[in-house]
Length: 353
Picture 1 (cartoon, one colour):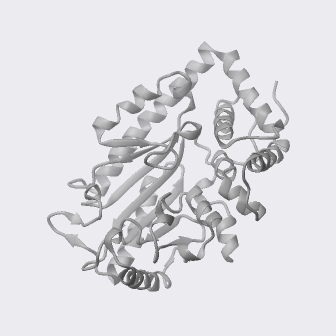
Picture 2 (cartoon, one colour):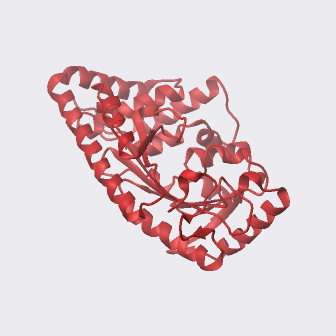
Picture 3 (spheres, one colour):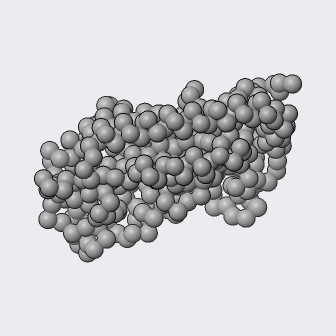
């Protein structure tokens, strides 16, 4: 697979799942090397040595038939880095951290392993839909492979040692991305999500801490890693996600019963703009695509010829620029975005009445 093919393709987690609401599952493990300075304090020479050591081991690794391709960040263009961020393969602040940083990406993008981010290793598995246990299984396989070949920092009393104290213990962060447009439209979302903090869960926007909930998309993740097993963490989050899904489905029924014509009109207007607009900002696009997906899920709109998540990510500035192989700004971005979406919706199913 060529370098450009790897970055251009849709990530596996962007596939359209038949089950609505739960868009993706992410498992992330933080690991560090014994007797090595944590990345935020490491000097350039040691950072390069750590990078070389880790990448040499990853070069020979094949996970269920897939090789990992290492991308050194200092060899990537700004647009390529942005594509990696938009596809959730690296964290938003990672490209700013300095030399000897990179990411190993599997051919399907199921796996990405950041080297010298906040920790020496950030192992990430990202899958579509509600696939917590499968994601944990794959992350565990990678973790076992690395622990057999590297001296990983671990203490019996504390567990895995990490740069941030909140990750000490299992080093596990579990995140589920959910689409909750009906809860937003019925003004219930703050009440429902506000109840999660006492349960040890954090709610963030589409791109993690500090980001907005574009397109009515929220990420729900665990906050506790010390004194709790991986299995307990997943079981707890799984139960909470089931409740969130139930609340969202109930809110959709409320929209059907209490405001059927208003709801249908709003959703059909969103489809009409996607089919005809000549300029679209990213904020407008996320709102319209969220409403369109809600209309599809509720059986009001015909299904589009591309999945919700794929359309969201591919309409972002980095992916748009990479697709047409030139920088874009101002109205040119908004024009290309609208053009891309018109082409998708032009071939959608014939309108229902």
